[in-house]
Amino acid sequence: MGKTAICPGSFDPITIGHLDIIRRSSLIFDKVIVVVMTNYHKQNKYTFTLEERMTLIQKCIGDLPNVTVDYDDGLLAAYAKRKQADVIVKGLRAVSDFEDEFLQALTNKTLNPDVETVFMAASAENMFMSSSMIKQVCSLGGDIDAFLPLPVRSEIIARLKAAT
Image (cartoon, rainbow, N blue to C red; front, side):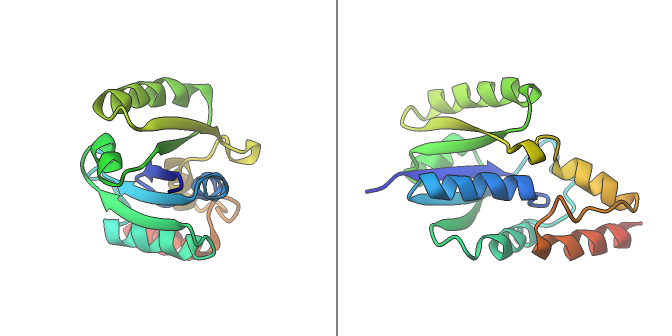
């Protein structure tokens, strides 16, 4: 049996940076589950519904046969146990991401000793990228083409224009 990795996130929306981590993970692990999680700090501030976020991810990973999309609104460690995942892959953009991600990794390891967290450095061109920043640039009329996969661009532009 091969190694299963989980790439968790809220993906509101999925960015080129997210997709880069997912693609690179798919080259290392036999199976990758992109799991859309509930971020309780953002719970009432999502731009896209859960179903829309999952659909957008599906549109972006169609060429990755070992990658699937799922959702969960519970603890990541419990989800990993249910899915018998070996690894949680977390992308790091900067040193500022590390402290929070490290604490989450320690918590997940305590809750599920069978899962490891692997930190994957963002590619240099994606180091500054976040969904929040992209939504801000878009809502102010900036060009977001370099930040989002093609299937997501028109969706985010339409959604943010409708909100103004």
